[in-house]
Image (cartoon, rainbow, N blue to C red):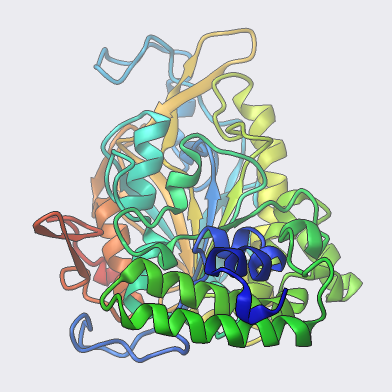
Length: 459
């Protein structure tokens, strides 16, 4: 059968065979080139960051074992805290890990982070983070979308909606997630934004490019043959579009098909970490998270605007240390420390850290008191915890805010998740109050009616 006689549906099916899930999900972001921040959403200052890499510690790391030393816990170790609605009955539990000041700035970290300690002058530790709920599902959704329900666009979707893409052949929002965390795809969902702004998930348990991105190549046709089909399909699509003006879904699908074809060429390079030298690969560590961080750096080099890197374990929540908190944090931090520090160091060596914002943290922290058991753990804790940021216009060598003497509550220069989101957008040149999308009769934004830029941490 000649091409001219193929029905439109058959043309879409056969031409798309080599594009696989890429075209079907409408995941390939579409502005063809990077644009300056629009006056409509600009904060009036030059953007400090061009891209974001969010290293997400799924389950919630313990702040009192990592970045927030609490000598009072050692003094009152084993004693009963005053009863509060947050305390489920455990006794104060001191951290067994030693803390020290590092770098010229004196940023304090526990001994669990020997590699990040060497990056102390590049990081800004937020010690006064707080969020609304101590449960994983709503906590994850708030951290990713600013809302407890799975109905809003994710941070990466908002960023790419506001700024477009820096590349022509790759998605601008990628979620590196080797498993399925609680809530799952809602964490990189476009919500009510157009489908082109949804994140593309890749599973880094198998690093071969053909397994990272399945059906990348057409099984039978050459690139030239695909190009011929695509040209014909483009003519049909444009004719179809003329009869359906303002059809956003159709326009997104057309752009997705065209960009999926272009991606076949560049993805082989961008997603292939084996092209790195042995010394670079070894610096990140031979672990799923290490390889994921290395992939994130390669994607940043190739113009991916927003990359999420999840520390997950086969769909579990590895940082959810309800039992055996100390031993589990030793193992988790060793892996995360090596890869996170390698990423910051690698970006800095390549001259990319200045315009790449790195964010590290989970959906909340963990309680300063113990959960009972043979191997005590720590429970969920949302009223005070730590995260850190590096690069992208952030003031390195900084510890911002504080929790109380026991690490229970953020009490000084408190930073809510909405404030974190507002600050990330500000560093990208966006006024968070102006980045809106009209849906169902009202204007929505990532920070809703909340959020303040944390100006004190800006370089």
